[in-house]
Length: 109
Length: 115
Image (cartoon, rainbow over all chains, first blue to last red):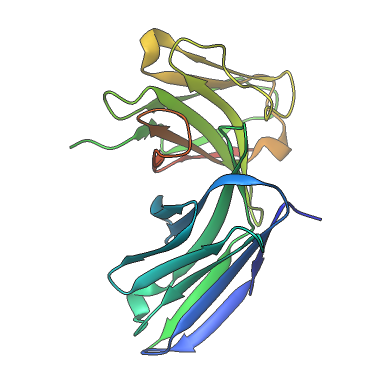
């Protein structure tokens, strides 16, 4: 079992829909990252969080440390949101990231 | 300002040859990370450097892989006697300091193809 599990693996939605991507992990962590990777493009860090909730524009990330679970939400989704979204965790006492396998999101106009 | 840069952007090499991949981190960032993304696979950690401390090499898949960081800035990842399974995108990231509170900034990656 991977230390970091994401669901769904693939998600297709209509423009304007509310999107939720989930991440569960099995180790104690000091921080969780949400990353975005566009096709053929580099990786951009969206959020880094260790508790609670963060919001940036139409993106919201939440984390529940007790349940070892995080969600990434996109409101009013747009085709330009189409990308792979990757969850990564930094375990306690460890400076390196362990990654989920990613969620491929496609927003149809 | 300038982000993390990597070179070359693409590298095709024959099995058995050695390759060197270069990473230029953001100026002032003391932590530098190397990751690998194989086709259809997720990202995996290879090695990270923090300042002058000994690097964490725990993710290197074999002794054919090595990395160095000169002068606390530029880093080179070397793969000796390349194998087809080494084909992947190699990503470099840097952060102000290694640790919880600092975001990692990723370079565009080097796509390595071993024929």
